Image (tube, rainbow, N blue to C red; front, side, top):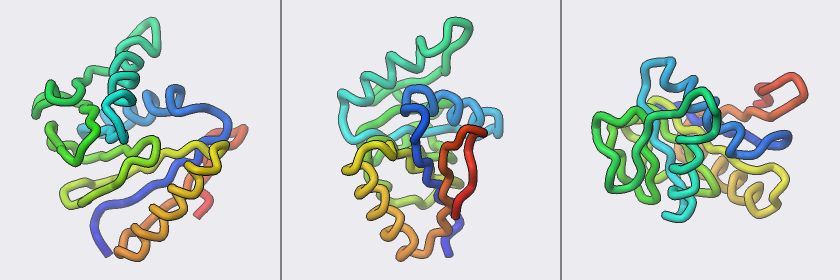
Length: 149
C-alpha cells in the first residue's frame, strides 16, 4: 500500500464549479496546499476565473499555470507539475493522476451524469487500486457526501 489516500467524488447533485471551492477550502483549513490538475489549459483558465469570483464575499487565493509557485496555497495546472509542493491533488475532467509520490491525498472528481466521465473514473479506480492505493468512494446525496466504499 502506498501512503497517498485516493478519494473519488461522484458528482450527482452539483457540478464541479459548486463543489471544488468547498473542497479546496477544507484542504486549506487542514493546513495543506492544493493542486488542481485539469486536462487542458482552457479548463485551467475557466477555473482560474471561477475561483476568484465564485462567492461575493471571498475568493480562493491561487495561481494558474506558469504563474504558480511555492508560495501559492492553490495551484491550477494542465500538466504533471506540482509548483506549490501541494499535499492534496485534485483531478478534474478526467485528468491523469501521474505519479502520486509526495501527496497525502488525491481526489478524483467526476460528473456522474456524464457517461464518458463515469467510464474514465472507473478506469482510474481500477488503475489506482491495482497500483496498491487505498481508494474511498464518496457519493453526493440529499444529505451531503456519503462514503460508499
